[in-house]
Image (cartoon, rainbow, N blue to C red; front, side):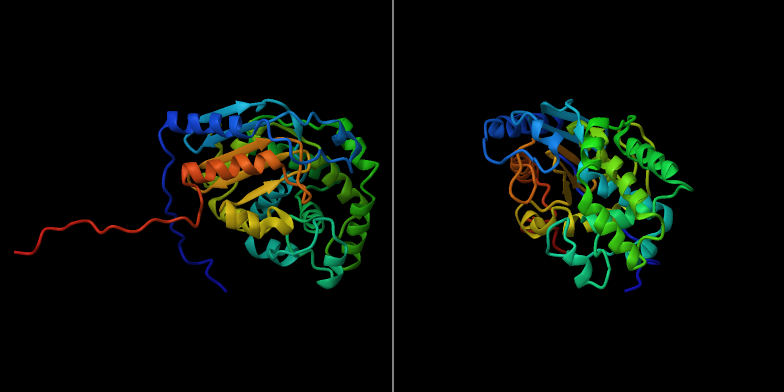
Length: 336
């Protein structure tokens, strides 16, 4: 389907007034701060030490407004949420068609770290939000050496966040000691020609990108940058093009919460991405980004409180992409 030469027109609404958004963000935090469901991730040893009581909710509006409640300044590792923004950077560098061919855009219907999904699809990663696709995407990151690729990842995600992001060395070392499955997936992708450089070096860059430290506020700003056609609403800097934002949000809508993506879209109706440290970023195109942080996860690896708070804000702020109301025609004067 070749429609890339057709001019795209965007049509979006606006958020309610400042005090209404502020009230709803505070209310979302108050509603779910005592929710005790879920368990902190422990397959990466250092994540098991996270405080399950931490909970922050942040909304960044495309005009630069910020609304926050709770632990929005607590840093945690970005983990899989990095996949969305590295994908955007790679799309900016190589274009729509090249990245779609190499990485794909379809949901696997299988767990995020599935080896079987690669084999069942003749070595195709299928989408950039599962580990196989994320490794293939990171391998495409511009840079003559792994060190240059890593620095381009770090500075690129920093531009999305509007501040310099730093590596959490403790998380990086902990993940490096336990990422055996990712190393196996990378070697498998190499055997199918999906990774053309040293697969273990690709895994190392990917592990570093997952260990970048962010806050719920950072995630909201990063989401708002995608919502605002690639312009960071805090710094005013263009990070990626509007076309790249569209591509990234389309992939997030269909694959951002792994095998629960259909459920998420059905209930909440926003492109989003989760990470096993407890972060979630959700994007309302043309309006803003929501960033949440709460370590206890459901069985699929998604923050329990974060999902509830995002669902509440989506409904209360009218963010669901699929929601509509009855059209009432304007009254017109009868013709003379």
